Image 1 (cartoon, rainbow, N blue to C red):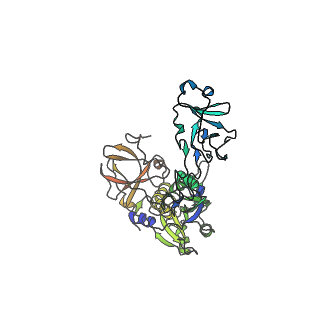
Image 2: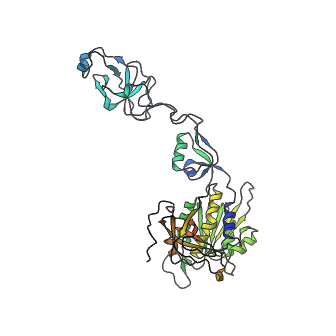
Image 3: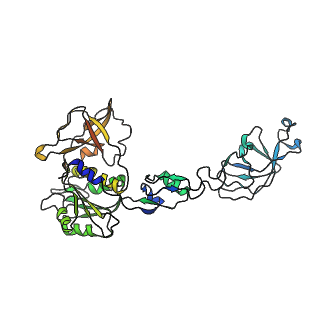
Length: 438
């Protein structure tokens, strides 16, 4: 039996999946296997930052009496431009070069024509009989005003995102602007779910000997949040032949997660099937309660460049299964995806907490809990209804509190593991005290 820390370390030490090219919309959330450099200048053409007029070199006005506000400009003839009629109809319009003394209409984002000195915004312009005049004291006549220059964001070859960075939605958009359609990334681990249990039903009120399904509802969104990609979901009876057929089914995923059948009774099918397949058992049991029958194995693949297919066996009791997912599954998925694990989350116990009972095997105890803001940092408040077969306590929880075998005294520090599906747990905590009892 592996200790709690050994089990987590084993899962976290597995090598990342080989990199592969993915389209940007599929690569979001994946870790970049190589740095992204701009493949062109960004922007690659000088564009207007305003709706208005692209101005060429101005021509001094010769007829003061025809200019707006000419009584204010007797000693300084105002500049003017011949307004061309072929203005930009949209950001994609390409305009002919400007001659001296010409102006042409542009819109925000449209390329400015060659010969443009600056862009005069619409509200600072006056058009009279085909001649364009600028408002007094406008700053828009300064060279380069209201023009977005070529390469102002990035020059071709500039670093956009470094290798090892997780590609966010904004990062994918930046990569597209920099000229990429596909990027080389460590992909999300592809997961096949095999849900076992002859007693499990998916709807209605369960009768004697029946239970409602929990894993089929909760695991897909939890795994998505963890960084995996659920490829297919299968539900079978407690049938070793059916289980083996699904484990053998090609194409093989990166990770197969099974629920139920991980113990050693005659009704449990996973371990005998893994023995038939000569699977390498990485973690046979974990010294924790609940969830100690969890296991992690690996079946080598034909392609030696890949690690093969991992098998994560989750116990069939709901709380035990989700605890095992947190302890073994989450660090494994993070490792396969090439991501950095999150910083440990620490809190202090609000009161005395007993360790796992020795009659149950002892070891680390995982208890669903909530957090509140305390003077010295976050404070842990244990949930009720936290036995292995229960769901209610986990549904109300934010974290699993890791309780050592000797238990905790009030104020003792304890590690907290995030409950998948509660991505807000590291946000500022609004709770001012322990959860209300219901």
